[in-house]
Image (cartoon, rainbow, N blue to C red):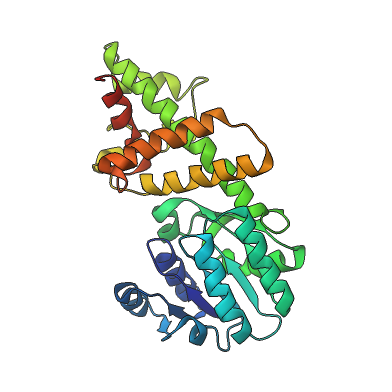
Length: 295
């Protein structure tokens, strides 16, 4: 078992750190928020006073932070305190350029590094069912694999530095677009007098089938585990979808790619967020779609 430092104990990081403890690792955790530190302590992690203190003696360092600027700030702080050859894994969802800069910081100090953003939401974090999209050298990915397997069920090595982030933003652009499409279809069905169950029974076994429909159906009833049956309490909040769609647009602009549906999806989710629904699950975008009919 490894000595693991875990920095960033929010809605995703907290359960992930807890699962590493359950797997038998010695976890030393840090977060700026006292309540998050207290929960990690209750889950069996040791609590460090600072991020730098958390990495002393660590074999592996895991970060789970809000944005690229936070990752670069923390990595600049902790890498000098790490032993040479330590593995550092970033599970945040950040921009590709920041991920590449983080890898460069690690390489300069002789550390192994992996960018490993996740898919699966808070349910996946708690249930050890996350998918990790990994970027970095083969040697680093091989070293990260035993740790990541204690937090998820699917690991994909997508390529070199930043490739994990590239895969994540492309995947979530698909997700955002498809959820809007499913929401529009149900909103239209309602206007046409078609029941939710009837549309679901047809589309889920026909060419309209997709994950947004069959796993996260945006209307109550057809998929009991979907947030629509729990007042749209988030597994993945709409403001996080705005973040990911914005990252996708930034990457598209930098790469010279044209993504008109991705751009429109970003605009719709930004409007939903601006109306005060950023904390609603992203499947709640159907509420915004319905509201457009009244304009």
